[in-house]
Image (cartoon, rainbow, N blue to C red):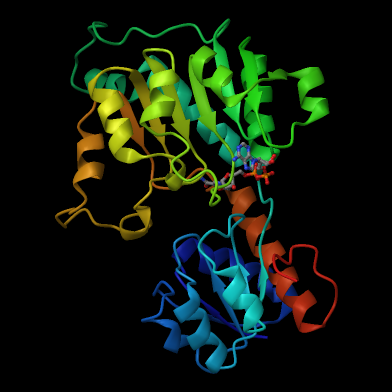
Amino acid sequence: MKIAVFSAKPYDRQFLAQVNQKYGHELKFLDAGLDAQTAGLASGFEAVCVFVNDRLDRETIQILSSQGVKLIALRCAGYNNVDLEAAAELGLAVVRVPAYSPHAVAEHAIALILTLNRKIHRAYYRVREGNFALNGLLGFDLHGRTVGIVGTGKIGRLTGQILHGFGCRILAYDLNPNQEFAEQFGEYVSLEDLLAQSDIISLHCPLTEDNYHLINTAAISQMKPGVMLINTSRGGLIDTKAVIRGLKSQQIGYLGLDVYEQEGKLFFEDLSGEIIQDDDFERLLTFPNVIITGHQAFFTAEALNNIAETTLSNITAIALNQPCETLVNA
Ligand code: NAD
């Protein structure tokens, strides 16, 4: 197939080109992200390959369809950025990579927890400046703490399993509880109980219409004062303004984000020479107890290899009219 690969970074090119040696598709790598303004670049291609911040709204999909594009191949798990109804109406198949390395994301959530708790981000700079004072670096034992996992799919279960290994008590909330997880690692409770009892809350559910701003002012007020909140899932799960208020009042004691509601305008680009216009994002960066990474939780060699493999095998299956397990829309 002829595929226009949007938002193609050097690492995407490297892994996709390498794995494509065995698939033999025609890949055109484009720096541009995909939206209605750039959809014209897909003219003459049968498929587009896209990532988390490409915007496949109805208008974009209509332009793609009018140019003969038949397939949207997401090289990520989440598909909240695709208007599935429009894609189905216009006959475009949507495929995704449901799992590439749940370990990568779970381990990143743990990295955020440990860094925030033991203040490694602050200690790193202190020691380099010859400041060996420990004031302000006090942490707490993870052992014996209660951790709430919201969403116990592949990533949430692994995160719970790792933290169980640290000696944490694991509480879980999911619309579809997992019996095996409950037997081995944690106890399912209501969301209210999870919010009220957890010292650390880690979000691992997908962003849907029903859980937009799941963590809002009301939810924050139910949490333990000084709670640690971790989000490696999707930015829209958190009401940023409410979280800023929670940090200012110290109801939230620590915040670790790998995703951000308005990340589409920021992440994956080098903006170090520019003036960032997002005041909420800039406010978050002023807190000493906030760590933000730019959607890098997935970013391991194993994950990139798996993403390339699944994406190209998805495209091959659709090209050959074979069943494709990762098809999102019928
Ligand atoms: P998964 O599909 O295996 O699990 C998701 C779980 O969430 C399911 O058990 C589902 O029942 C549950 N769920 C759905 N809606 C819920 C709700 N409203 N409340 C509670 N639980 C709910 O997904 P996964 O592979 O574990 O990934 C989880 C999320 O992580 C993805 O949706 C994606 O947004 C995010 N993600 C982030 C990165 C990153 O680099 N930061 C990488 C991959 C995935």
